Image (cartoon, rainbow, N blue to C red; front, side):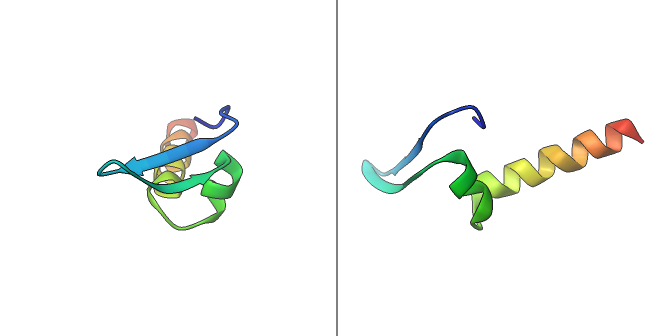
Amino acid sequence: MQNFDRIVVIQHGRLVDDGSPQEFARRPGIYRDVLQRQERRLAAAHD
């Protein structure tokens, strides 16, 4: 998803968030949490 131009989050049929992957990575939320977990896994794999 980091290569996407835009991410749109729809919850219960309503638009709840919209932005670039870079914007989502800077704000608290599920997207940033997933990125941080991936980074930790990659770092652990390289140790």
